[in-house]
Image: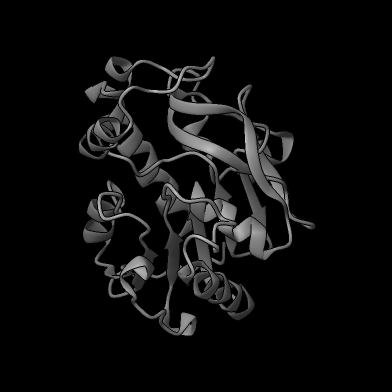
Length: 240
């Protein structure tokens, strides 16, 4: 992502805008990071009929996850406006981070296929860097072998033309990509908190079965959420 000038306190007063797709799934642990850095945060809830802002006034755009698919505009007509907004943000050169559905939306805007993954991937699963991801370094905080990340997805994205493949695992080949200097798409969730996952689990009872679906008890491991928040803070520091 494009790096702001290296002056003390440069993050203070910068604007983080995020797109929310579900009332319960917000910024999660990103909010405390933004408060620590002095970022202004604003949001769009397209499912409530919110209009999208001018991307030129945004320093970091985060497109969050959600239960719908990136190609579900026949069920959620507002997706068409969101796809147009993300396309304009890319054209403007806005720094963009897409998380899960957000990564899939970015991939679709860039012309890549979004489709069901071979397996549902739910719970704590490690990711590993590609050679390019190792060299890139921005995701390094998530590659510790004893630090799994939170996953919750049924679909996945192909790599857009011109994208750099940054991370993979056994369940899902495309866990992260970059495109150009300002776009990052993630399949995993670095932002989720214990409270949000507990709420999601109440909505998915019983859990689907699968090789890459961990137990609800394991998903609610408080210590892992604390470590994930620390890693995500390091990641966000790197990309801003």
